[in-house]
Image (cartoon, rainbow, N blue to C red; front, top):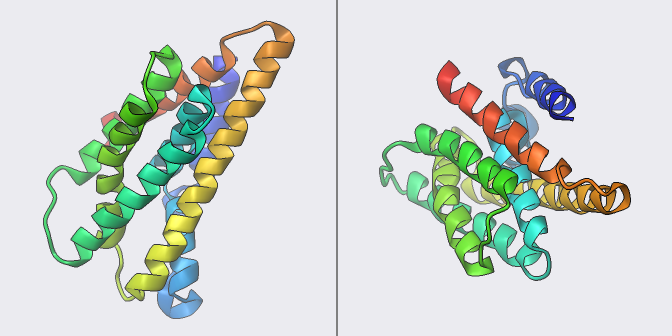
Length: 196
């Protein structure tokens, strides 16, 4: 199972490789450039999906509160970047977020909804700052709205994946599927950190 998840993540990595660089806002518009931005970086895709998986593991209101905390705080990080406020260690913290959230999913440690929301909000500031640092010639408002929508869509996909894995686990009596997805996510984050 872990091998299959690793292969799926590797395929995802190929799909988000630098050859498929971010859309140029001058050619495609700021909204399209912003919406595509989180989708063309393996680091962003992994974290967004992992946040959804983690929220789905807690169920109930976590599936709304946790993604909302991430998206909202990511907007604050974006605003800080375009205002010129520096934030140290942006890329290392983004990579750390993949590893940390992946491990939280893998270990299935008890977490409160509030604790989970605060944790993802911390990491979201750095993700938002990275988006702001790559604004380029795009219009800030439409770029921000669209990358926040794409992020929410990735969270929803992670939640759907988490719900689906939980159903498979219940049907098959196996409790390792979601944890394996978390472990594969953390391992990929570690590989990205070591490659950088």
